[in-house]
Amino acid sequence: MKWQGRRGSSNVRTSSGGGKMLGGGIGGIIIAGILWLVFGVNPMTALQTGQVVAGGGDNTSTEPATSDDRDTQFVKVVLADTEAVWHQVFNEAGQTYQEPSLLLFNNQVSSACGSATAATGPFYCPGDQTVYLDLSFFAEMRQNLGITGDQQGSGDRENQGKAGDFAQAYVISHEVGHHVQTLLGITQQVSQASRQVTQTQANKLSVLQELQADCFAGVWAHRNQQRTESIVAGGFLEAGDVDEAINAAGQIGDDRLARASGGAVVPDNFTHGTSQQRVYWFTRGLENGNVQTCDTFSGAL
Ligand SMILES: [Zn+2]
Image 1 (tube, protein in one colour):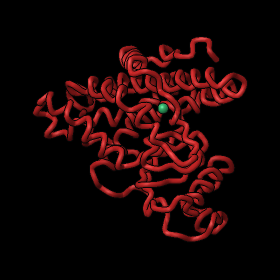
Image 2 (image 1 turned 60 degrees about the vertical axis):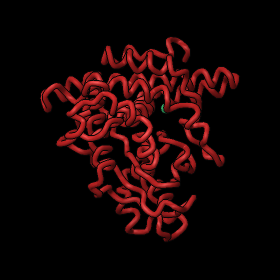
Image 3 (image 1 turned 180 degrees about the vertical axis):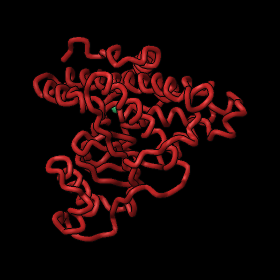
């Protein structure tokens, strides 16, 4: 996947000193973020003036990601790519897209959805409209998926980064898909419906929600390809990229997420459906580039 030289998002932050389970600093930031959303109070102002006191000072904090390391740059570009595409989709429907935040963390993090560890895997929290990504997951993913990419033997990859890039982009885009579901009210409908049905039926709804996020990731890839054709020759996709994402769709799922531990409430720790289903819906979104085709619920809500 070609990603260098494009705009990076300013919505990416890095959690530093992430060794503490319930760091007041992060809690403070999150509360400040909620204040911001609800009351329009700038979180930085709120923190500086001490309006938000959540456990007092410790060394856990978030800061804008200023680091130039490859993973951070990559994440910024992919998030910006999702912003461009979803602004376009929402505009076409006469609506306004609200951009999510993305927090990069190491080891542990607190979110409005509870605390999470690196074993949780990437997730989206509707409560603070933030995508959470642990950097070790990325490193591991590149290692595991890189083998597939190397076999493609494309010379371009040496210039553009490493194999596995698009699979990582797919993961980010899937989480952003959950954000889109939140903006569209689908997340809320699912959780409301889930309270009124059996556990088995609730699990089914959860799977449909996951598959729709896969389809939205496909829609993003389709539209981003169109969009980037005017920026970079041949668009951002390279040979083997789609196979990479399909491979990832099969691999990143239940077994990885089943390692989530410790009572954290994490939206993405439910089953994601079979590999076959995930591939089907991702491909459907990718081929059509239209959110209307992502009707995984088809009357279930
Ligand atoms: Zn998901």
